[in-house]
Every structure is written in structure tokens, then in C-alpha cells.
Amino acid sequence: MIFDTGSQHAKEMHLSFSIGVKLNKDKGKVLPNPNQYRRLVGRLLYLRLTRLDITYSMQQLSQYMQVPQKPHLDATLHVIRYLKGNSRKGLFFPTNNSFQVSTYCDSNWAAYPSFRKSLTRFCIFLGSSLIS
Image (cartoon, rainbow, N blue to C red; front, side):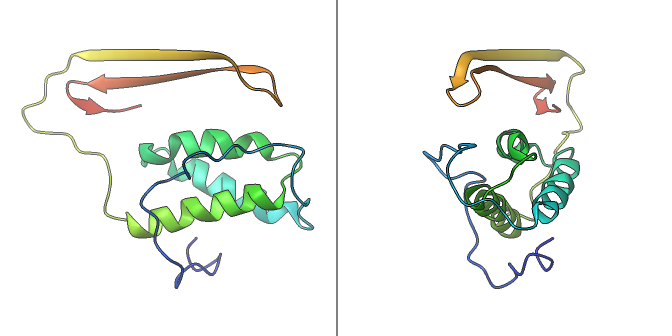
């Protein structure tokens, strides 16, 4: 993905999503080729299965698959640059881990004014390891 997007010489990012960025469906120039955005987000959604650190970013970006715009593509390229700088991150399961499952959940009613939808976030731990 890094080479496909031309990001091999781009600056690496330390956060998967820029702080304070609020994407909107009505602001920005519509992309002339939306299939490029859709393909890129699809690949990142698949990668999200093993890279839980980009889950929030991908939840945000996948909302704009119908009519992607320039700010959405810029945010997606930000995720690519984050992955470039953090390629060694992954899941870690210690050998002395318990098999106790713990779940935490948080919700936010109508968090995004443009969609007026509620968001629910959760995380599941197996012992001390985050698995979902």
C-alpha cells in the first residue's frame, strides 16, 4: 500500500488519526476516481483485523465510501503514513496469560451531527491482551 500510494518517501506519522479532525460528508472536493479510495479503505479494513490500532480510523473513514472527497483521501493517506512508521507493531500474547475474557463498552448518542448516528465502541481482552 505504501508504494501504491506513493508514500514511500512521505513523513511518518505517530498517530493513526489526526487530533481534532472532524470529517464531514459535505465539505471538500469530490474525488474524480472514487474507486481508488474504496480500494484503499477496503485494504485497510482487511489489515485492521491484525492492527487494532487503526480500528477507530477505519471506522471513521469507511463511513464515506459512497461519495469520497479530498479530505477523506488525505485522512486515509495519513493512516498509511502511520502504518509506515509503525510497521513493527502487532498483537502480543504473553505466555503466562490467563484465559479470562473481559469486555468494556462505551457509547455516544448522535456523536456526528452530519449523520446523527450513535457510536458504540468496545474492546475485548483475553487476560491482559487486547483481542478485539
